[in-house]
Image 1 (cartoon, rainbow, N blue to C red):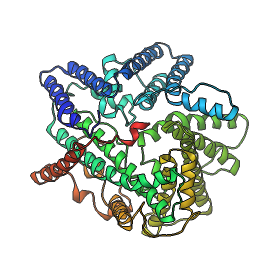
Image 2 (image 1 turned 30 degrees about the vertical axis):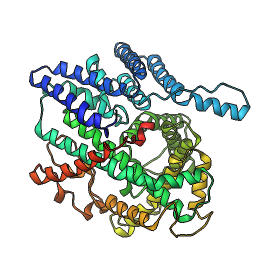
Image 3 (image 1 turned 135 degrees about the vertical axis):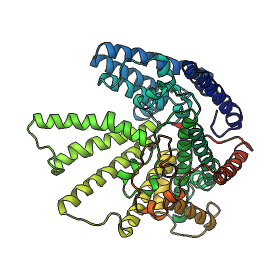
Image 4 (image 1 turned 90 degrees about the horizontal axis):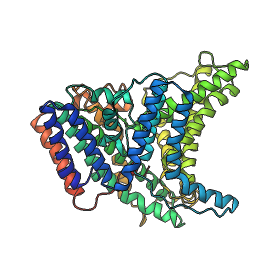
Length: 518
């Protein structure tokens, strides 16, 4: 079941909301949570009911391990739990890829299993690993199984994030006023949902028609011009931008409609003036997870080893090249290799992660050199921001070519054309026209100059939390001047956007969100 499908919009969502808030009005909060869990399992089972036993088995096993860790803080139990989760993820997501790789490298003749990837396994696996780690660190008390089930299965975030922490969701589920309807939260949530739906079906699905022919031509080895390659790369960048931004808005909006505040997962990443800033804005909860549970532990372990060996460690942000390579480059590269492989079973995803690991290493190195050389300039000046944002965008587009391409060969063919390896022509073609590129540039201007959804909702009593201080691009059009205020005019505008989006969504089979594949 898709958020952008008629059965969800006209059937599942109204029924889930009515029963949930109806039970809340009757003072049956616990039954409302049970209902929410059952509804979420129905939502998950809509794709393939055969995947439900795996999800339930994962939840029961991890809850049992958590109970053991509460009673006995054992590193062996923690490692065993992490291994169990990763083993399931590796089997379902990577077994076929590993067999193919071994056969290609050693002609081993291993059978290649044809395993259908269970929906959302990457997301609920990482979420439960975080839960076990936090329990081991003493950050989680013995929790209630009903609340834990609801925490993992809550359908707005189950399929494609955000990757939530127990401390963000479970205390809300324990709130006595949870299921009682709050008109402002429901209104804000419905606004976010409809805006996200508009982004998905009216923008992302439309711009896909510009990107798909270019990547299809590259996959068939057809020659590409510089114009076609960059146009196709930019089109896909905007497609996945609006697709994931739309999903993230819809997920947070749905959570608000049920009285649950999900963390933001998307914060205008194409406004980033560096790759470091980009990953602080793109899939924010994945970056948070990898930083907390992979990058930081590796860095801490390496630092302790260096101290034990009498080697230098950073002092006031200063370090020599060897220390930088050991404590910054090595864990950064490994963490982003994990991010790349997490997204999919294919060498193109490993290269995507390695490329961003290299980007970030260079970015961190440049920051240290600037500090050492005392290079100081106004980072809010357009003379700094504009070229920095354009350079970051170019790096992102190169990375997303690897992300979109079906294989490494296709990606390299695209990259070769983008760096001038083919024709340098800037003329229209059957694959891409100047008019399409003009629309791409208009969308980039909207992305750069308009406030995002959480900036729009800043200051509303929805408990959504603070957002970053506005940067140069954000100040071009003040988010405060466009602040969200319930009114008849706003209802008409949002209703019109929603009507157009819903009409298009139900007119044909709705495309899946891109992140559903991961």
